[in-house]
Length: 217
Image (cartoon, rainbow, N blue to C red; front, side, top):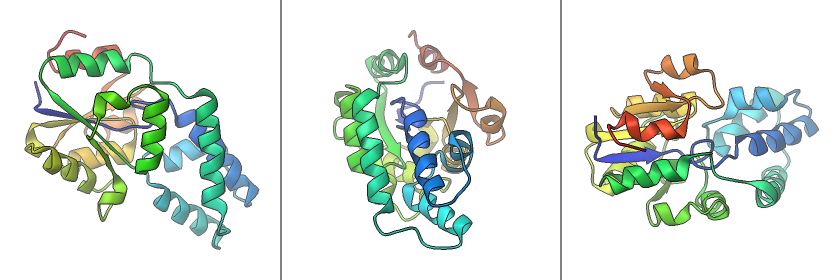
């Protein structure tokens, strides 16, 4: 039950950013003519890199987005993060319990290094993962491919078979299973059945996470 390494996704798992990010993304996409709301943005884009998101939006529109679109979206999203981003409830205590048991931890996310530096910094979680944050920009293929999680395990020096991944998206859970890792699907903001279908085990409260490794919270 006890892994040697627990790999955490960032958005929606560590930082409570999904509502903000998908609200601003949907608004920016609508301004370009794509009929989409926050819920549809979550369904279609959560867990993917922005490179993949841009490609999907351009495919749906049938044209390229304006050159400044992504930079403008990022600036608006970061401003909203600074105004009200917090950690996922209970996640600090869960991570600290896992680390106190001698289990190593890291972050592996579709977000860019700059974005994770901002969000982990704003939420006070950055010191928990100092020097152990990996981004999809470091690999050839983002989620749902297993590349990012295999990269994180290799950099941390762990056998993938002894790693567990905490994810909240279908692409992320799919990537974890493809990497041969134990996938734990956090269902706070997603239908549990969607994560179960990937092969993930599910849980709905961060306070329950240490217990999945046989630990006390």
